[in-house]
Length: 345
Image 1 (cartoon, rainbow, N blue to C red):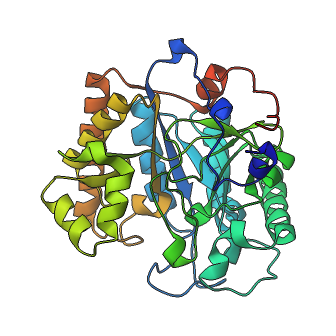
Image 2: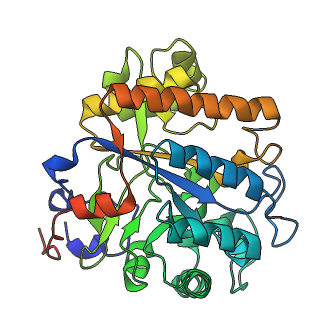
């Protein structure tokens, strides 16, 4: 396989030599990425208008909780949030205090330049024309530099929407790490990317292999989990079988998120990933979930109480398994010097 096929394409499986072996002293750790974005109606068509940035109080409460737990979140942040004076000041202070890191998150429908039609197909920035993806990335990076004093080095595409040019464009823009690949998920029926078959552990991407890809963590759990992705894919192709297997706790696909995932499912997923040899567990959720009424996952104050109870249980289990939190700096320090650009294999 020619290395050039992988120069920009984050939908292609990495070569064997692209896999990253973290420093053994790093152990098994976890990180938290927060998709920090505007609030909007998740059931409505995409729109450039009609959104808000009002979940600031919820974000402040969440940051206090995670800081007390010794967790340093990475807030991957999109254009409307960066444009909010209150949000930018609050997050900038967290970064200055060394309590959080700030990365980039791109929702193309609200990120200039506004040159594409707004629809579901164009909601995946990695599938837009290369020049448009590049221009939107640059607009976001420049605005973040104005707001926070430096360009971001961490990225997650909105809707996980990376594509065939994304790794190259991210490397050109100065990013060091991407966390857009949602391994074991396929969004092609929604006009989006297909991440099936991609790894759970980090790997090098981009033309010169200077970009680290850190996939979101997803496990298969249940008595039939040994069948893994192949069995899950076959079950999905057989109509209701996948749901039946999940309800029977025979085979479930479980991402590491408090959004829609029960505590017992997440604990089973943590244990399964550790057994697979995954060295870095990558948790995530959306920032509007921190304030009731903005996402399907936290509609009421009782839901928010349950959200924090979920984290209490998960952090307790991680500590029991000897899995501590890792900051962005600690992760990057545990990555050995990059591989040389791959030659034809």
